[in-house]
Image: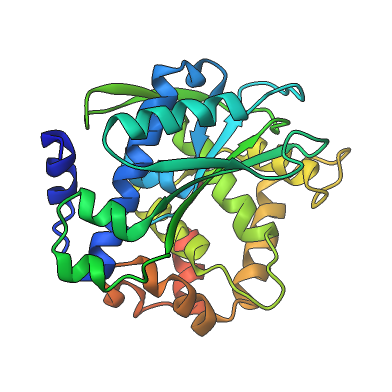
Length: 289
């Protein structure tokens, strides 16, 4: 195993089989980001979402997918050639991976999706995980990382360049933090999963309120207009946002939200104070810009 990969795994201090799988997934995510940099992907797109917050800003919860937005709308964008580059990159580090573009991803939909896949057990053995850990995983189990690119992004956002240092130093273009917050706020206010509550959105809300409370209201408005959750001929004001936020908190099923995010956090005590009163209090700390 490459020394830099060994160091990346050790950084996560895995103990249980679940720890090792999580560490493996995060290393694969970072190698994928490196492969995109080598292939000049960030000249056309920016990283956003929970994994961007974790890798580049230290969000203390695990996130599964790699989400990107083009810098400008381009319905002719082809994700497949970048996925081929990711496959080459990860194979160069000793991982037996293959990629699969979601059927129809090159069609009319604005979100293009693809998947990076490897056999979990083989990959664990390749990073020198204890054999007992590797054998505890179902032999045919696949570790899958979804890559999504929004080819028709809502505008009114800014980006910045952040630097990762492992396995080598490389640069990643990412949404500026107030726009990352706006994207998360859009998910919190507008994402619907039938009866499933996305507790991860609420966990990230707490993280933003504590660490980076500035929220770009114009980008939130652009996202809500595009998704049909706000009229295009009406500005979203601070008072409007407050009304929407209060309504979301008052209708939140807190126990379901807590259960959703629990597998993704290392310290369950971080969820102990969750309640409508708690969320009403922390949203007072959000600064609209």
